[in-house]
Amino acid sequence: MNYRNNPKAVQALIRPTEVHKDIFVDDEVFELEMEHLFANTWVYVGHGSQIPNPGDFYTTTVGDQPVVMVRDNDGTVKVLNNRCPHKGVEVAAPGCGNTGKFFRCPYHAWTFRLDGSLLALPLKRGYDPQVFSECEASHGMAAVENVRDYHDFIFCRLNPVGQSFEEFFGESLSTIDNMIARSPQGKLEIAGEPLRYMHECNWKMLVDNQTDTCHPMVAHESSAGTAVHIWESSGKEGPTPMAVEQFAPFISSYEFFEDMGIQVWENGHGHTGVKNSIHAAYSPIPGYMEAMHAAYGEERTKQILGDVRHNTTYFPNIMVKGPIQTLRIFKPVAADKTLVESWAFRLVGAPDKLLERTLMYNRLINSPTSIVGHDDLEVYQRAQAGLMSRGREWVNVARLYDPTESQRKNEATNGTNEWQMRNQYQAWGRYMTASMTEAV
Image 1 (cartoon, rainbow, N blue to C red):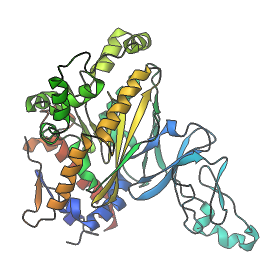
Image 2: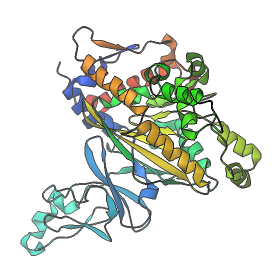
Image 3: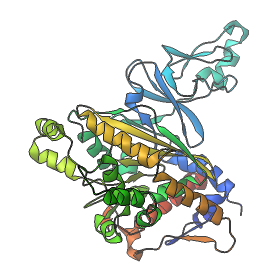
Image 4: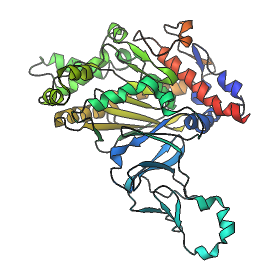
């Protein structure tokens, strides 16, 4: 199938209760996602605490586009395309650091201000001023025009034209608000480097999984179930270990997840855990409640900590866990390859024991040496291989489908409803074809 310059063919990949397997396995569809989907949506770049000082930078990707997030001299955050306009070399080295007052290309020493504008170049006299002024290179490193710093969470939209940040995220930003409010000082900090884990599967499988509540008790029985069994067979002497507290909810019953609820927001966003979640029954951390009461008062603290939503999917490719302070990025590498980054946050002003719990959860669940994460990894890889079969063409997302849901928005529903998955794929179709339609 030829999908390029064919928005009708792309839109036909999404049905109300099914999605075509090509959205997971077709290389041309993947290329169009990089060109259109990741350009038309607001994509997470990084956190302000990664670049606290002027000149601090962090390199990453938005879709397949290399970018650098940098703190300018005025304190604002800029996102630049990480490409020298001279010969195309990536200017900022992979990773993070401080570039000083300017960026310097390692190839020919062209230099650029922190906002990307051209500062100087060697042997400038060799360029005719009039001719050079008409060259694209005279404008320096291309800056991303649409950047939003939302309480230190940095997002950008590559396409100059499109939905505003507020229109795109709407009420879904309440998850970020809640995670920030869990700090007695209302402030988060990135805690170290992320755990990076390569998955041989399409990136949307991981996004889909975040609100799939019918798999934990099946896929994780051998890992989380075994850990709980060992603890129970040992006689359960003393306090329940932190690891067991984190493992045990993964094998909760279908009824638990049904009652937990799912919130569906516009534009592909949504979260599990409306009334309850797997993060609701952790042991109290000494000193934390006192710090929260001092900062917010008892009633407001109850509201903040009573919001125990599980996984919040921010379309297209991040998931946030407010109660455990983690964020995962699903970075597309190829149609069948995804790099997952799992970041942990420190609640500023909270006891260190909370950060210990966050880091333990990240290691146990999300790391390359995790126990639970490998269950999902195997399923993703088997799905990627299985979708190459010609026996069936469509993937089913019909559970608890209601034909009227397309006219409704921002609703809570049964915790095993696949409405949120359908919501993501419908958003995928819209943002994939928005700029394709303009180009035709």
